Amino acid sequence: QVQLVESGGGLVQAGGSLRLSCAASGRTFSSIGMGWFRQASGKEREFVAAISRSGISTYYADSVKGRFTISRDNGKNTVYLQMNSLKPEDTAVYYCASQTYYSGGYNFPSNYDGWGQGTQVTVSS
Image: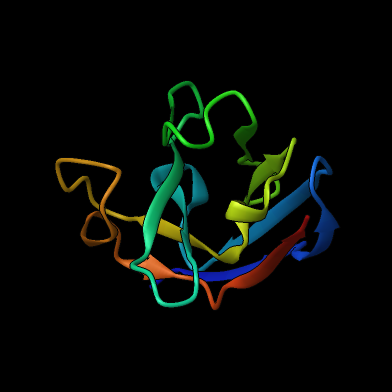
């Protein structure tokens, strides 16, 4: 069982930046794929970004491509989401997720078997 703890959320003006962190424990970090999802009020949880076990491969939702960057530090058991040029529509609770076993994909919540508690990101216009 992987335990995940997110941090770094907050309130920021449109055009600003935030960096989210997700610390993992309970399993060898370099053996698990990681992802970020978000859920706005009244909406379904949606894919934001994912990164492979080695960190070589990254994937992004079209809505954040070119603005967000996912990275990981396997020595620190941490995955990051650097968010730049934030927009009000990025407002949501952001969750990190772990993929202990490859499930055939990376962009659906069902592809992941571990979740953090979430961190709120609010972007004001």
